[in-house]
Length: 590
Image 1 (cartoon, rainbow, N blue to C red):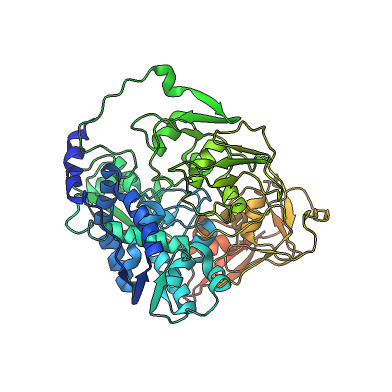
Image 2 (tube, one colour):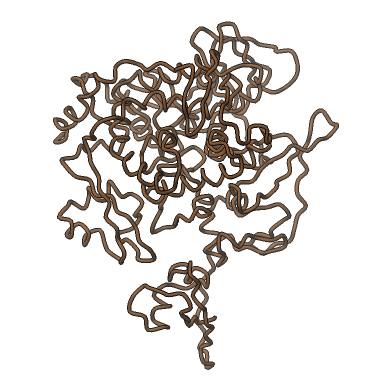
């Protein structure tokens, strides 16, 4: 509790943001003018109200924005990206460095590993630059600019951040390319409306000086946390808290990294969602057994939320990882926990055969999902005629069978466990970053995108005459244990997901570069190579010569040949990590 007094001062600005801003009829975004129609204004205003209704959570985001926005503004100016895009980082991660989405997107700007590597970020067991505010912001700026080059329309570039440039092209075509004025209606893509809500909610609140200031400190040589701590006369734990992108004890030397240095007396809650309240804390008496009690809700293990809990504290009490907890309940990390509601500790059901639910006042599809135990994305698929905010009396289907409903209920049905289909190519939350549409129980084909687009498998429906489609199982192909034979249309991302491994692992195990791609018929190792017992060899070691290109580093050369930086330095008697274009490096071949 040693930070409690500081935290009270830190969040004492709550009263200044009490007035909920109103969504205007016209907004300026980047170099565009947006006309907000009344139907969309009501939807966006509802999101603005939700963002600002809890001062405790709103104010911590405001303070994080005040701290990090100067860094983001500077990078955006250097990259010539409109500063309006800075509000997108609040939508993506609430400026939590180690935020993880339900689809395993990570960091300030919520990159998946494959996309992060494409944008030049390092993601491995030592470093994850998705959690580095400088590196990730520059990558986000370049990704947005790349997509704006396709459309000459910043609003479509914004939409592409969620669904990829190819997805936007397929959904809207080129009719808005070059547009400088657009109407925002209820039919506008949800991601854009959600962004506009964040811009309206935070635009005026983030003005003024931050309570926590940070400076940047470039590191050009290998350095341990303890060395850096001594050099800066700062506690190591504080440095770690503000630089979670460093996953081991040492900052590597393959390139220049920027370390964030916080200044002032810092509240420990700044980098988490479990923050101190600006008002006197409420004293709640809870029986010890109630704090850890878990029950089966509709046949699925669940835990009841207690007063004062957040997503992180509730997941911790349930002894479930935060990313799994968010995925099971289809919520974001800054979700406001509803006291008394049950939150699931396992995946919800995919249907409730023949059942339906009659909406009551105040219900929305997510609440129905929590009450019935049917996945939200399934409900959206089964009820395309309904909007997210329901009206009393709306009938919500709990399965996709086109036949008269046999049961209509206002109570949560008790469901028998249902086994997930194993023929789903990919299953991603509909609100996740870089998601794609997947239709289980329909025939699908996977198409790889070019390297200039978001490297995510795009799934298209195959037109067939049958009313009910049965997926054909792929023909068995003889493969060696621990390997995968690449088939037409497969991507590294899809293969990594199939075997539940990381894209970076596949690259490392197969000595691949992210830009090299894969080809049909190629055999990939899907687990680390077994270390074989060495056999004495009488032959002299054979070396090849690698001529350094301008973009090369010791790290990239080592990965290319599946050796270590230390090996290269020893073979070439190098005393530092620098390489120059045209330099010839000796590489030992096996």
